[in-house]
Image 1 (cartoon, helix red, strand yellow):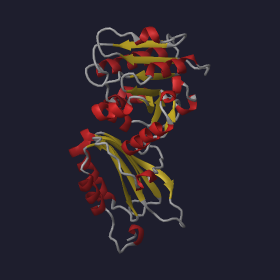
Image 2 (cartoon, helix red, strand yellow):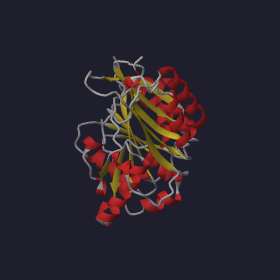
Image 3 (cartoon, one colour):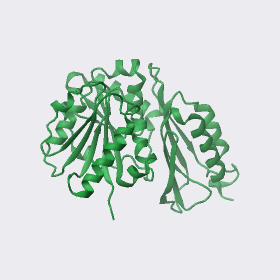
Image 4 (cartoon, helix red, strand yellow):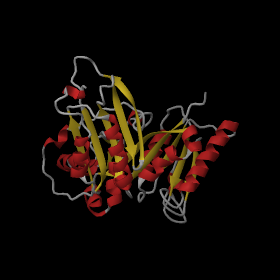
Length: 332
């Protein structure tokens, strides 16, 4: 049985410290060989000269953004790496992809699910987003792609925290949480952060059991008009499975381009197990989660992260998908 090769997608706005973190990973004595794919925006890249490659394989992609004009090159490079690994001419244990600071990570992540040959050989483990603690507030105000990078993250790491005070870090953290309530926030000053917080965290799985805890949404007014925002839908009744399936299909069809990530743990039609829903743009998957215990209340929670999403329409539609109110927990 061939075990899929784990892939970590490293993103973050220009100057956030991605290369510094990448050097930290490559320099660590973790006993693994890593294939690195890095994308430079422009004809000539210099990041390759800044990386300490050692025994690792560095592949540089130029002439465009990894999420658009060269996505075909990404598929080609991943395919070639897998073939060389299978033939024994190249040894590596995992892949790290560093995107340009101007890239939307969504289309890159979709590559691992939409291309059958890549999906069969690779497993996208997580999207790690570096955030420049000094300049992030201004970048988030001015550049939607910076918001998209935050919204898509499975884990957020704050860089340059030594250059700001605790009040600034707290304000930035609260803003990041409002944009993306599902991503833990850590620190990576000078690229220093435990590798256990970066590699093999299984943050990106279409079949994962997940916990969503957006308690911070309970209060706190903010003054930033971020296009990328999140909201949470909760329900204490079971969903009607067919109605829910039809409605979510419509949501994905109509708003999929603007949906960065959406995840849910749902009670559906008295099924004995939780139903896990997870999606990226137009790509959506579901799986069975852990069983419901007889003594626990059945409930559902979904989180949506996206650009200018019609929150009221989605919430009203989900409400109409619930089983009748006079049927406790959706029982029929």
